[in-house]
Amino acid sequence: MKTTQSPQETRVFLREQIASDPRNHCVRLIDTLRVPGDEAHESAVLPMLREFDLPEFDTVGEVVDFVKQVLEAFAFLHEHRVAQRDVRVENIMMDHTALGMERFHFIIDFGFSKQFTIDEMPPSELPLHTTDSMLPELENMGKPGNPFPSDVYYVGNMWKMDFITGFPEDIFRKDDRLTIQEAVEKFDNITA
Image 1 (tube, rainbow, N blue to C red):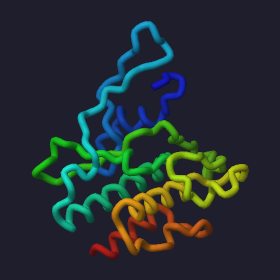
Image 2 (spheres, rainbow, N blue to C red):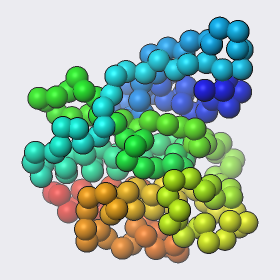
Image 3 (tube, helix red, strand yellow):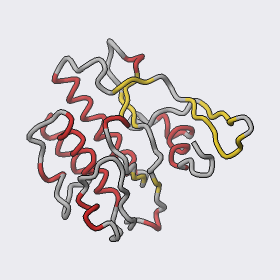
């Protein structure tokens, strides 16, 4: 990763006291290594992780736990004013050491992420054209908007496209979209 473009929020979530919060599902940064002869780049040393569903889910309970962890992860990011902005299944990994026990999932790849200051809230940014081209906000690329509802859309669309049918449509509305915290509360009510 480029040292000048390394997202500061990655270092905040991975190295500080906040890393011990059980709601933090950001991949743990073990170390960074300088690339010899290249001061502009460094390599991130991360734990060995595997695809989020490898091995495949065996029970409905495992799927419910996965969904809860992803919602919790994005609620945690948004609580700390971080928009991930590239939500997709390839950016959700599982700790392979937890096999046989409760699976623990991590969010990876913060290359498009941005942490906003309190003074920048609510943020107004141009939408990013990342891997999900169905984001309604992309219809008007020149119009700035709040990236947090985009994360909510990406999470819902990821589930809808990859393994869930009949997902609540209020996650997909462009206007008056659920916040991630509202999605967490709705999920908790459904699974209570």
